[in-house]
Every structure is written in structure tokens, then in C-alpha cells.
Length: 447
Image 1: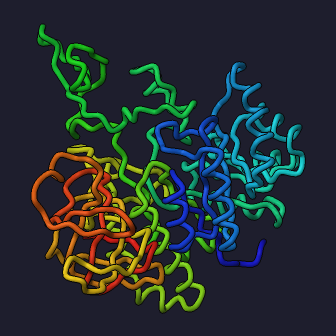
Image 2 (image 1 turned 180 degrees about the vertical axis):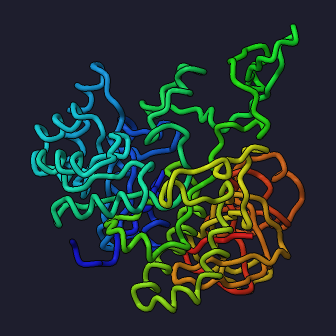
């Protein structure tokens, strides 16, 4: 049995901005997807250039980068996969995540020394499967989400000490086994196993009695009236596939005891605020526990308060303590909850004179959601502090939009003409602002 050690915290990133947040807010490793061969085709994903920048940034902070290539490949994917692995070899990520044996074989041919991890898509449910992949040269296997902590602990006892177990500990749960879902392909022709999932498990369905009064029912998704699928009557509601999200922040001791080497956060389609919040919370929970189990217990209210500030669907513990029951589903809606709103990440800090000639510190950012002069907002810092600050002034960077023709106070900031505004209501608006308490570049602003 391996000696208990501090686990790796593995966080998702959909873009270079999110990767930097994951790194800065506590991840030991990040997993990302390129523009092909990963299972999040709708995520922004990384261009070759951004992947190169992201790997360099992570490595400069001592953080590993894992790249997904975990589609279930068809014949027409294989030649492109070979070229893709050749490109990745030049970029030098720390590990590749694959599910398909054919993709694994190609990767081994192209890049023999690559560290390869076996994706949860490969349905890894027993220690013989782990042993099989170890003999093929895989360093790590990602457990199927359908495993309990007891089963994972059994796997740990029956595999080489050097082999690593990675398990999801937080985020959305798929309705199908290890995420190998066919619903999207059936309804829309977009294959989840090729990264094009339309998430039909979150759709709203209605239950209808047949017109002739027979006691047979049918399900019809609300945007497809008249398209029926026969089912038995169910009194529990309409969102019949909609699982609660996984959250194990209350169960750090049990995860450590099971011998899981890497704790994986789901969310390659989530915002920087989500990733930073979950990363920072689990980082502190892990560090607190290894410093003192008592400290971990004392800080539990803080962990729960922070986790509630990122988007989530009511939480559950998945399969870790046994098979989920009807209480692990959400039947009345498919909406997210969140106690915080993502506003911006300052990416520039500059000292300039305002319209009256006084020197001020301006912070530049691209706005994510509307906020206004006079609002009291929160600066979320990587070290765990949350600092209240007031928005004192706000300036819109002129880009030719109609409202700039109005007579408003103007000032030059960082060489560009800006107009004084009272709020930033336009999506992705370029803004400069002055705050009562200054953030640092890279901090997250939230409401």
C-alpha cells in the first residue's frame, strides 16, 4: 500500500485565461484540449499558439499540463491523430489523456516516451483493467465515476505502488456510464463520444397520456412537440436525466484514505471564476487537512461558503458511498445556482492623469457581466482573501460604438481615448476603472 501523500489537484481549463487562473489559484496540474480529438468540442479549447503559451506559463509556476485526446476514434480520425500527436510532442505537455486503444497505439508509435493517462471514457472499473494498462506502459488510469471509495481502495491495494489513480471529485455528472452517452447522437446526430454533446440529459421533458386513454405514457422534450418516446409513468417530475453535481469537499479524509493520487475537477466548459473558486477551495482544504485534520474541520464553513459562489446544480457524492438513489437527481429544473457573479479579471494596471489632471491608478479589463460605479464588489485573491472594494470611476475604451458620439467626459488612458461611464452593460466591453481598494493584475472581481 502506498504511503499516504498529498494528492495532486487537477483542474480544467477551456482557454489560456482560465489556465492562468487555475495555475494561480492553486492547481498542481491542469488538463486542456486542443482544437481536435478531445471530448469538449464546444469548449473554446486551445490553438497551437495558446497551448504553447499555456504550457510555458504553467511550467514557469511548477504546474503540469495534461492534454486530452480521448475521443472514441473512427477510421477517419486516425491519420489526423498521428499528426496531432506529432505536434503535441513538439509542444511538450506533461501527459496525454486517451481512451481509445487505437489512439493509444498511435501515440506510442509517434511519441514512445510520452506519459499517457487512460481516460474515464475507457470504463476503468477494476484492478485487472488497471494492471492491463500498466503493462501497456500507461502511468495513470482515471477511475470510472461509477466506483465507490471502497472499490477504489481495493484497486489501490492490487496495483503497483508506482501506478497512479485519478478520480473526479467535483463537478457535473454524466447520465451514462463513464460519460459514454448516446442520447445526444440519438436526438441531434451530434456525438458525445466525439466531443459534440448537446447535453440532452439537461433538457426538460413532459409526460403525456395517450389520447385513447390507455395507461401508456410518452416523453416529449419541450422543443420537439409531437416527438414521443414511450416510458412508464413516473411521478417524480420532468427532468428525468438531470443529475446533481458531485462535491466531495466534505470528504477529504475519505478520499485520502482511499489512495487517490490525483483529484480531478470537472469543468472544461466552465468560467475562470468557477475554476478559480473550486481550485482555491480544494487547494486550501487539502493543505489544511495535511497540516491538521482539526484545522480542516474548523474551516469547513469557509469551504462550503466558497463552493456556493460558483455555478452548480445541487450537490451529491456520486457513487463514492454507494449507488445514487432518486435523491441524486433534480426533477424540477435544469438551472444552475450561484452566490456570486463573475465581473472581470484585471489584466492591466497603469498610472494616468484623469480629466482634472490628478494622478490615479486605472485597472483595465474585459467585462464579463454588468456592474456599475458605486457598486461594492469583491476582489477574490489566490491566497484565500476576499477584499471588499468600491467602484469609484469607470471608463469605456472607444471602439466606434454609437453611444460614444454623445457628449461625455473623455480622457486618454494607455494611449487610447476613453469616455466616462456609469456602468459597463455591453458584453465583452473593454473598460478601465478606479477602485477604493486596488486589486492586483490577475485577481478576480466578483459581485
